[in-house]
Amino acid sequence: MTATAEVSRREAWVMAARPQTLPAGASPVLVGVGLAVADGVFAWLPAAAALLGALLIQIGTNFANDYYDAVKGTDDADREGFTRVTAGGLIAPEAVRRAMALTYTLALVVGVYLVAIGGVPILVVGLSSIVAGLLYTGGPYPYGYYGLGDLFVFVYFGLVAVTGTYYVQAVAVQNVGLLPVGIPSGTVTAGAVLAGAAAGALATNILVVNNVRDRESDRAAGKRTLAVMIGYRWSRIEYLAMLGVAYAVPVVCWLALDFHPGVLLALTTVPLAAAVSRTVLTETGGDALNPALERTGQLLALYAILFTAGLIAPEVVA
Image (cartoon, rainbow, N blue to C red):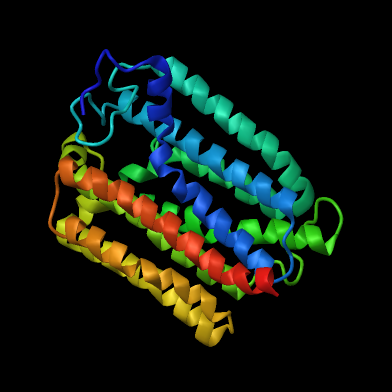
């Protein structure tokens, strides 16, 4: 999409923040909150701080990707995806870089409170999340250019986000004191890890669609995403495999971990997943895959809402 003179500065900054990607940051936090409610360890202030921190890191990473992809020459004004404001000339590179720094700084400020509660484990998680966001497209070895972006998304937007959200609430309720060094018993559960895998799988699929759409331009620019490395067929298999992980998790949680059967509500999103899959399995252009990208984000959000509703419903009606 080519940038146009009609885009206002405010609209350009919204485009740079990429609100369509924010379900990837918010959804795993929502699931972590639902798990905490179900287990009787919900704490609203740590939960709210976890959500704010996750969204700030997500936006900061979006700014970083916009900036670094432009200065490295990976993006140009004629890319098929959503307009990048730096490459499109809508916002000066230095302004985007300053916004990136400011957003990450705000995330660090929120992180101070979370570290006070969660201690060293949250310090490691928070700092590594910011570093990972910066190094995705920046630094001397941008791992997003070497096929590792999918793994990063699965780990940080799934496993880390869900278990981290659960952890800060559980440790606050346990009242173990400020700055715990280790991980207190009961603050990271098998259910949180499994739910994190489901959220991570669907978040990874957002990146899969993005990289399938951009495969040819990325390959021409020397950006070796996983889609560039494994091709369309295996990228589509990856998409289906991630859906398989996501839809296996509620069943496993119900049968093996004695979760309330309400978590099976998440399975009602299968028709939406099937509809998006049909597009991903047959299309390569931006006209079809840009809507599929947004719908994959919507799938993640709806799945998280229904999974969470199934977790908290017994507690609410009790």
